[in-house]
Image (cartoon, rainbow over all chains, first blue to last red; front, top):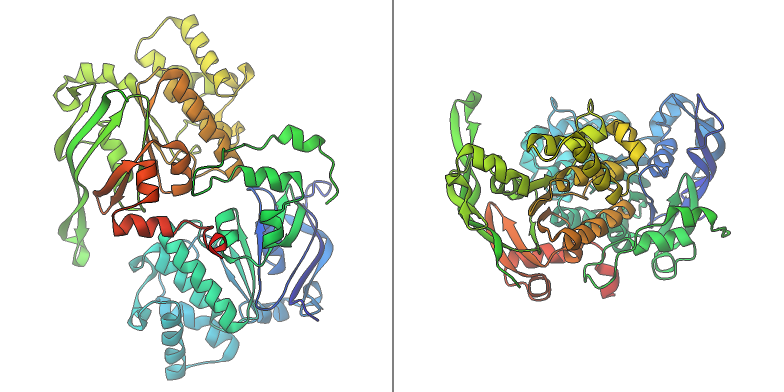
Length: 279
Length: 267
């Protein structure tokens, strides 16, 4: 089997209004050593899709249809205990806000070491060595292991998040807008770090973003979401250079280019609604 | 191009920060370090830089919303610091600001109509009916309808709220508008709408913009001139074309290199 992760016809509704689909029939797959980018505007269902893979959907939301297969295994069939063993061990996750996803009262060394203790039973000097190696790997000096999150900059905190999520050498990494809160120069560093980790560890990556520049830099495959549905999917070259769906075309037309040559064209949503194009 | 409408000379601003054990010590952080800039009439000057470079401090200092520790700001040739308080208040209608966060910058307990009319009321412009007419006209111009005047900010989306923020600033027919990251909280599609709206309004009302942003792709589209800030200093200034095509400073070159979306093009 080629795919690492396969999402089939995923549908998510609020449990109070099961007819309102927040995510509707979303299918996508991720291969080892490849990056799949999910792009879309806010409210298009990108983050919900990622959260449902990890089984982290809020109780107010209901997955009404579809399956998530990880290495051929349906994640919904697993017990909470088994799911916990996959989460962090085989699938790592990075969240958008490096400021709020770290525990402020624990040292970063402890937080990076925690998954290693929980999943692999590492202790003592062995644990310390591994944490130091991880910090070096993401470009933070190993002696910073005793620092607290507030002593680090935003970019460094995001690096800590990455170190935590790759600590157990997961087969797959889910990154939900990992660079949105960061400055461009830091963003470039983090993206190239993720890219090199993907190659060296042959990791499959699901990257959620709204920035087409980021997509162009790191994606192998692209999935475009609009109002809870996948409107277009394909390789990065196909989607960015020859978009088929009018929404993808319209979205690309609003992205300012670095040369400033292309006129900006906002999306005409009324026109989109009337346009019937098979996806 | 015509004359300069706003000039800043050697602006300095320090913040004192508690430091040391238990915060007993203080250290001074230079937020603005001899910053000078000139804004041409009816043009856009972009101020770019990374977080912490002093861009937003500069915005607030230019409008005298924060006291300066040194330097002066000249608006139409007059030093704002020399003006008596009442005259400064009168001049403020010409110096308006559009904020980054459309969620935090509108009073949730005021109706949209009241928010837009408030500036007119404060500056004593027109009677009740005239104020209403003016506010309505401005709201319609930015793409909202008359029924929206009786709604509260929470009933609107982020893009619409930013339109309200623009209407509030422009209803006074200002001369200089400082836009502090006006589109960075918005989706790309909404961002394009707002950028085009700002450009149209600039031409209609011959506005001069100071456009603060960290997004070099956006700046390329909207600005005529650019000032690059780094650690409280302006490290490079020039026309958009000059700076983007032949940046002189290493720092500017690094910033331009970090714009995402270039890797694929190079291949």
